[in-house]
Image: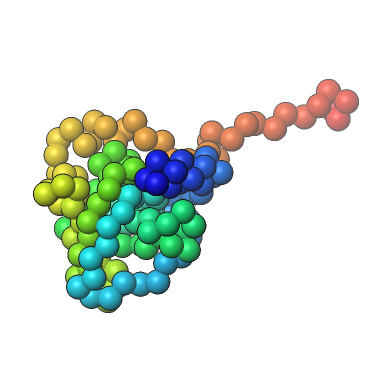
Length: 142
């Protein structure tokens, strides 16, 4: 099931969901103290991710990592969490949570020196204006 959900998430990324764009996570806000389990299928920024409880984005829950360092990057969180099964315990009504992969928190993992190196391997899923093709005037229009 996790592989199917991960495949669907990659399709959403391939479709061009922008980093920092409106969240595709349509699940309701979890209650304080709730424990969430599932794969990370979308990363919004260096502190915010979506946990899948099903294949449809309306079943994905957005949480903000309470213990993520201020310097956390989108690429860093992608390299640490994307596609991994996590367990999150919601800390507050604002969707903040402590999330773990195995026994170690994602926030602690983001402080690892190797994460900065791995983070550069991830590129945002949409082109920036400088990456866009340059429009050229056709010879007939001169």
